[in-house]
View 1: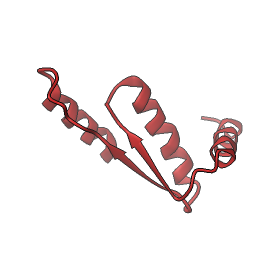
View 2: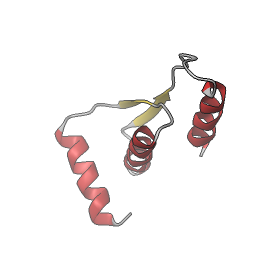
View 3: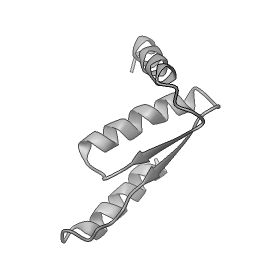
View 4: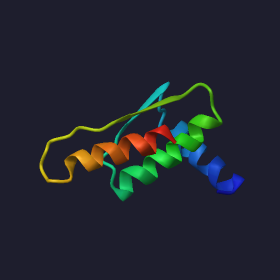
Length: 77
């Protein structure tokens, strides 16, 4: 990701006045994975922010355990 995009994302986050801790509701799907990735980039360059991902297993489908494992693996990266 180039520096201009990083600056634009950082500017947007500051504009909406997100405070110190950013909590992402993380399903493991494409949208929440992209959001987690982008916010993580911002947090890496700004020590005033921290990030947490929350995944809730509702046991709705047969792959629920696999989803948890994938979410954990992604968050450890």
